[in-house]
Length: 137
Image (cartoon, rainbow, N blue to C red):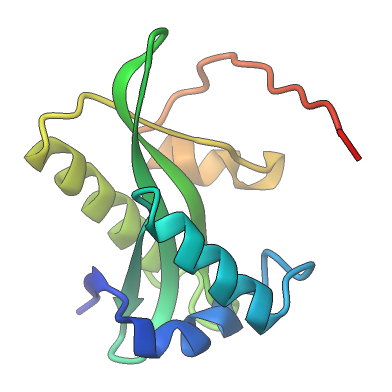
């Protein structure tokens, strides 16, 4: 059974070992600092336990003029040793339940092309948005 629950602050170092698999540009100190700052802005972190931590999800509630209230999954990472075990689906299902409990109608996330098939299988649809950025420094 996969247990999804909030990750306590004292387990963030353990979570970093999973996060660093997708975010190798961060070191442990940068990760801790960013998560601490993001939590002040409503970022929530959840873990999938098998019983050991096998997946990480960071999400936040957002409200925009274009979309209204929605959840945005910033990070969904399954430990490379636990892929294909249902951990990713368990995290997505938890996010859906979390959103429904807050009367939020949809979830958005950014996906790498190689992960798109997984999200489509879990009920997401490609909404055709094109993301652009401008590097300021």
